[in-house]
Image (cartoon, rainbow, N blue to C red; front, side, top):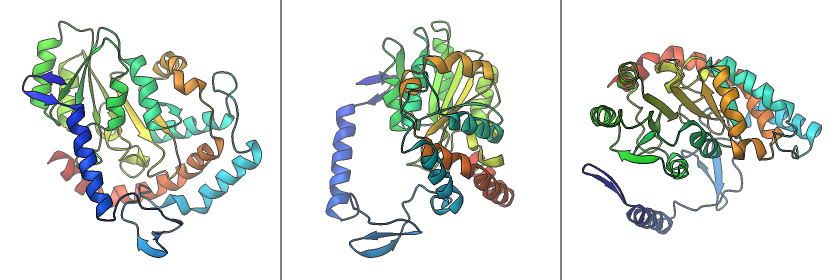
Length: 317
């Protein structure tokens, strides 16, 4: 049980809710289904085609010839895997991918095998023993998993996007901790709402001890200039902001990436990301990510120009 003020959360209760909800979905025949194909807007379930409204390939790039050919080319060059940890001998596709993502985001970028593994590698390195972590109750499950790796670091949950409460907590705990981290999503997958970027920007300006780590997996690729996502589009470019991106949704490939303000931050932190520097890379997937950067950018520029005002209204409402 974790508790701060009147807010409480129970792991056992959460598991009970998940078990009940999934059980209902299985009984209704809408969960744990198996598809024999998905190379279009349709999926084939029980030998019947259905329009797929549950896809995470937001732009449909998983069937673009550029991505498929890029993955095939990488397999022909490196085989099905580049069987070496990055710290020993890295596949050159990693640096190519990071360079492309840096052009897209305007930040320094380090890639990882997945967004979840990225959180589990980066957060324990970025957060110090004397820091305080304040995590949104509806932050992605992978963020809560990473927060559990912080050992003796104090971690408290806060009600969803409650900026007034966050400010009160900053004022209360600033003198007791070296830094205060607010961990949340940029765009929440279950609720569909954006983080309160304007209010976070004000708090960052007002409180030098505040640091922000956001998982913006769900708006990466389709929102903002060149698809950099909502968080990088609206938060200040400061060393106190780190934004995690996904290559497995709009990019229709796999992997995660962390966008940081400066190359120095990347060089300082990357060597200590244990599961990132020691895992085995997957070059075919990385090549697919790299190949789709130009395609994603062109789609995003067109959609962003036509839909920017609507998204701005949604964020600021």
